[in-house]
Length: 123
Image (cartoon, rainbow, N blue to C red):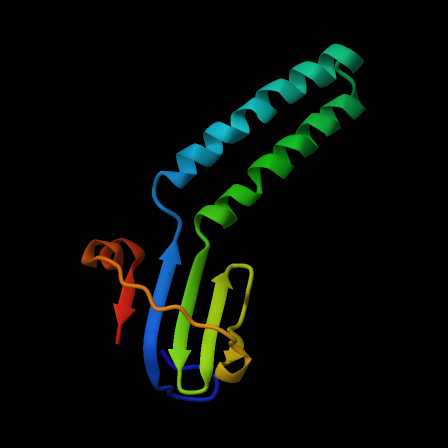
C-alpha cells in the first residue's frame, strides 16, 4: 500500500477487527433497550406522534452505530519515522506518533494462533 508520500518502508503492520461473536453480543445487549423503551413510553404517554418519535429516535440511537462498530478496523503500521494508525471508519487518514513522543515500550510474545486470529503481518 502506498500513501500520499509514495512508497513507505514498513517494519511492522497489523490489522485488528472485532471477533465474530461481538455482533450477536452487541445485538443481544441492545435488545432490552429496544424492547423496554416502547413499553415504557407508550404506557406513560399513549401512542402519540411525540411518543412514536421518541421510540424511533431510541431505535436509531441504539441500532445505527452497530454496523460502524462491527465493521471497524484498527490498522497499525510501524515505519522508519514512527507509528501510524487508523481506526476506520472513524479516522479517514492515518494518525502519526513519532518515536521521540513514545515514552515507554514493552515487548511481549504471543502464540502463532494469536497472529492468525488478529491478522498480524510481521514484516
